[in-house]
Image 1 (cartoon, rainbow, N blue to C red):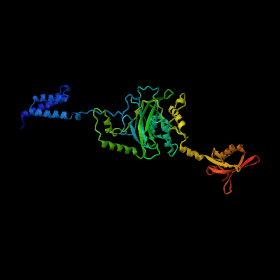
Image 2 (cartoon, rainbow, N blue to C red):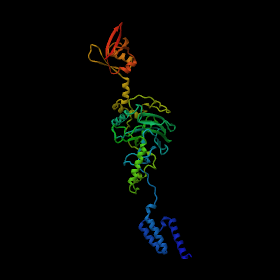
Image 3 (spheres, rainbow, N blue to C red):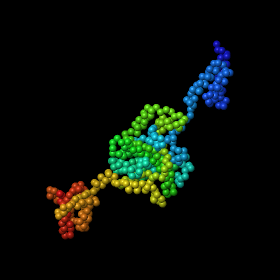
Image 4 (cartoon, one colour):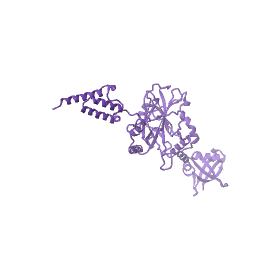
Length: 460
């Protein structure tokens, strides 16, 4: 049989708990401070039955034991994950951010060589409040070295990389030919081997897919050296008034790996992070440890950090090779109007570096060597050979070189023969000159008949 007094006590206890949890905060018995809560608990238990007093003591002890665990408050976002609220533009790279980043450095992403990643450009306010002359802006996406390296050193790195490529047309950065690119951006142009530009509307989100074709270890011929970190930099220009004015710059670090090395590097970082057993942040470290603990699982994009330096021009790599088709398919070449002299300030700014420090790439030099023919000739009365450099590797080039060397009109040359070591006399033609005469020594014999000159090159 139930006790009547016990039922009344239970009702009183439930009523007390209801008033405490459902009533206003200022009327609660337990105060926010630990000492106040103990005193209030003692005073409250004086007028309550024994078993109710014990129940309240247990509940009070629980609330004192787990105050921080029961309290739920959202963690502040990592300061490196999001751009400043005052930033007019926001750029993201569709690759997870690296876990371990030194304090004060830009965010870092791991990329696979040749794999295309989305780069998204937007304005947080949808283009409102921007002091631009037009809603169309030009952005230049480039792969560059840190500005701590002088331009000559940067160009030396790029030349070393370019000389090791299978073709002289190999670019540092490529843009994917996909419909999504041309739906959001216009006038895609390859302004340099390590940069491309395009126009986009600040009222809409723009997206391009880019791929990087160099490894972080491609800038040294030594094996086992640490890779050189690169920067993915985006400069945005206001070009509505006919001139281009840099209005925003943002950067993130990138390390490029081969054979899915980016994923392996992320997994290695995760394992190292787990072994370190980083604890959750407290109120005094501003969430820095929390950023390390969270890793990249909740952060599948890397935000580019805005830069305050808008004066230092980027170093663009433009080797001295001839190739056509700088303009990407689907984009129209900008018209050379009133502001055509300022249409590509980046290219013009960095050309002096290329002209001053950059020789011909070695691969192009090899191709040029194949087109050059050098002959060594002397007359029977001479002891020292003269060098004949043919401007073109054909019979016309040979006639022109002989004419300039010995001072008679080219049209007076009637026939040119080659006499082999076995005594065979053959007509000299383009094929013999191009493939069988380079760096060959000849004895030059010239004879004149009716104002025409006959030349015989005797192979020695």
